[in-house]
Image (tube, rainbow, N blue to C red; front, side, top):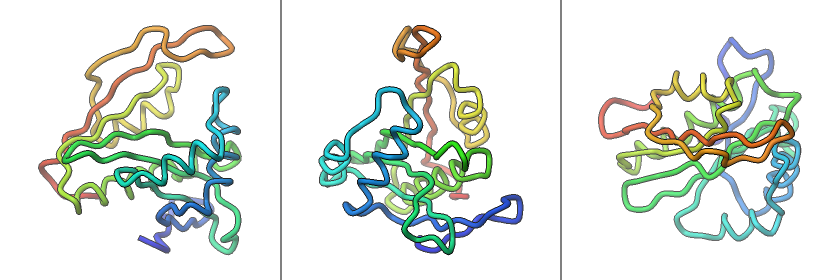
Length: 168
């Protein structure tokens, strides 16, 4: 999936590539820009080193040393989960998150996974809209799961069945 570019709706073009251990410093930086409780570079190295973990990184075309977003997922047998997804604030609403999720869905289709789960902060309306467009449905909730500046917020548990249809 190297070199996958955005469509005409984006103002910039991005390449979506598989994650490698050398990307961990980018993952840490983007995660720290996105979340108040962020993961360390060592956390990312440990995760990427696991056989069941995979992911993709988005880079602005023409700037291969500068990542703008990533997604990290885990696949066990035929069930997958998004561990985290983050896009640098300056690159949000340009389709980066959608392209990253599409890369995960294509990979899971290729390996014949049946289900994909993720959790999203109930306050993250933009992410929820993206996940609805991608066919996710709410299957649970973890009350007061996230700690935010505004207090505690619930985590919505979403699922997408992958057993039928074709990838995007």
